[in-house]
Image (cartoon, rainbow, N blue to C red; front, side, top):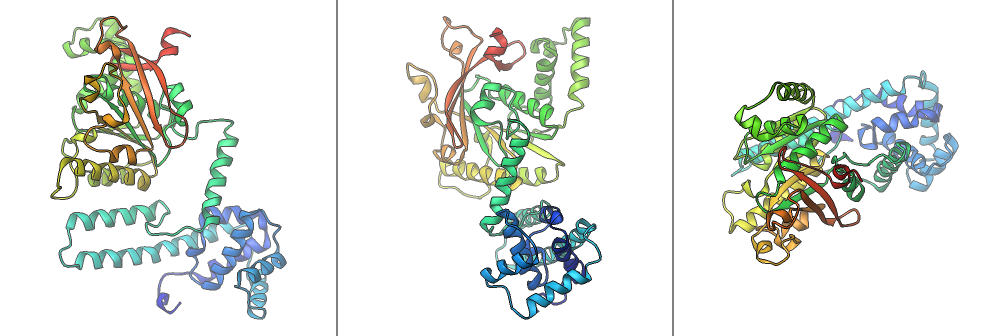
Length: 440
């Protein structure tokens, strides 16, 4: 521990945290929610905490005797000093009632030490020959953001830690009584297939131009903002924020979108628009219509959004990579795709991204898109957790109802793939569940 000498720490708080768990095992979950072994300054405290954590993870009977047996098995028990120290912790801990407060002190000290480490790394990167300012700044923001979210960018996680996270997720789903593990898309059949929009997932929605990708993304974002009550950030590289919000007004009010463009509104239309505007203004729905934004800039902006729930991007092929030169556009799109997947994992939220398709689908008799039609890069299929294709046959045939639409979940890393029937309303530029529209 010599290399840590002089760094922020509070030995008394660490002793009280361990002592509280020894005095009252009921407070162990309270401590584990706040701390992990690396948060302790002293190695002896880390060893004791890790042993308690391992016992808690497998639901083992816990008391000072079983703890010492666990430490013997782990090779961290010294027959003379460890026994005496554990006994001492029991004696000097004033009460277990303040375990949460003791833990918060330890956590603050740990955070200060980690900030000191991150600051040193940033300083070293900035002084390296040939360092790119944007790259160093992005790495710095990522590191600080990860600390703020309670994560370390370069952490290696032991399986008991991961098992606890998985166990907690399963318990939360169980206690929710079948509630979706992810944020609702607003389309029940889609939620059934993919489990909602799952955190850290990279989801692609692809179609040929004019099918309605933007409208679909807007609708999903609206449903997510309503249901999850978390912030939804919509990055539009093609349409302006005014155009997007006009579509939302049409969607919400039921007033024909052309009327909103021309201003030809009846008194009843004005009433509907006013009510819709009032409801929309209460939602945490944010828009960015910068047409030249990079993935790094998106990440920087999203890190500053409180209670972020979903990121929506329209659309991938309009983006540009971070490197100055690429051998070809396919390589560049592949780099963007990979960085978007990384962004989803770093932010811990779903990233829903539109993608264009090549013209190959329109050359076939059956115009329905396939995975091979993803434009410019097979990396998109590889990186995405879910790939969905929007299709409206009525665009190509007058014999088909113009409102008929389908959403084909062609790739789903977490489950089944199948086609979902939708209905397209051209008046309000919205997609809805076909069952809901037809009243089935």
